[in-house]
Amino acid sequence: MSVHVAVGVIVDGRSRVLLTRRAGHVHQGGLWEFPGGKVEAGESLAAALDRELREELSITPLRTTSLLEVKHDYSDKSVLLDVHVVWEFAGKPQALEGQPMAWVGASELAAYAFPAANEPIVAAVVKLLT
Ligand SMILES: Nc1nc2c([nH]c(=O)n2[C@H]2C[C@H](O)[C@@H](COP(=O)(O)OP(=O)(O)OP(=O)(O)O)O2)c(=O)[nH]1
Ligand SMILES: [Mg+2]
Image 1 (cartoon, rainbow, N blue to C red):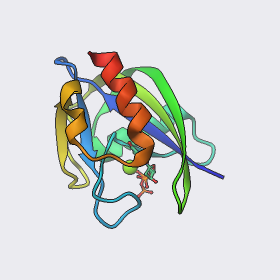
Image 2 (tube, helix red, strand yellow):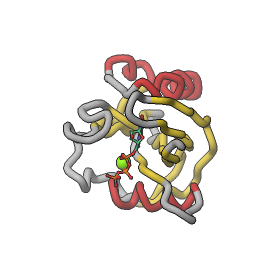
Image 3 (cartoon, rainbow, N blue to C red):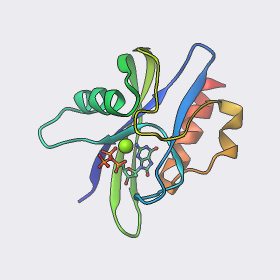
Image 4 (tube, rainbow, N blue to C red):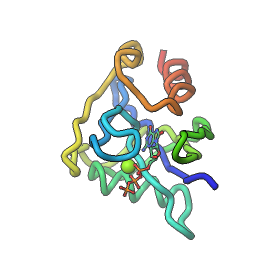
């Protein structure tokens, strides 16, 4: 069974996306990611995205569109990443969990190290924003 994860590609007015860096000790630690987290039992995807972005960044998504779903098997676990673009949000992103954070243009994404599952996400984001 795979872990269902709500993932947000948060876009600002200059077409940059928000990346955060995973803590060193967790699964896929030290790598950059798009903010988000596990969908809880009985929770909708939209509710999970809303909750995770509030918990991690103190923002509330206002307008989202679905981008893609990625199923990936790591050696230790399988994930289903349900990726949505967040075009508008309320609040100013703050790294509430102390995680490094960066606004990155599509042409700079190649310089960041992501988990293996993110390859198709990064490709879709580059296509979307360039
Ligand atoms: N948020 C996010 N997770 C990703 C990405 N790429 C990727 O492989 N993952 C994986 C790493 C984890 O195994 C899983 C996300 O789970 P997580 O442990 O961060 O979930 P969470 O935020 O609910 O954290 P926690 O409360 O359980 O500590 O998805 C990504 O771009 N964003
Ligand atoms: Mg998370």
